[in-house]
Image (cartoon, rainbow, N blue to C red; front, side, top):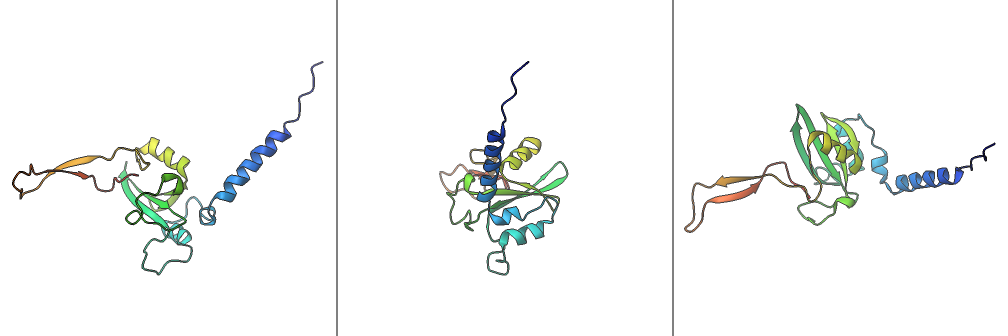
Length: 159
């Protein structure tokens, strides 16, 4: 007769506590999101009553729009502290939460979901991702100026 297996209730309890800790750390506005709700509803939830102020999209650090494989992707980088990329460019990815909207409906949020979108569609927004560049020649050149300028491709900013 083989020995009876030890109960694994300790590991189950640890896993449940870990999940609870992750949920507790998540901002309440993110917990209110649901897959499939409209872009406008998501923005209203993330704004948390701040709409109508001078900030057109409160609590969004940066917003990027992409068109891939006939679909429209909006990636909103949620920031609970309402910092903006143009005033505080040193905010780290770990301090932001991507909210992915596809064809006007919330598809998911969090870096795990964004990593799935990156691998499936090639949309890259994480720090260290390569930003495509284009060489542009200006019509009026200054003396000694080669005229070639490297400019980031529109809509492909990364952090």
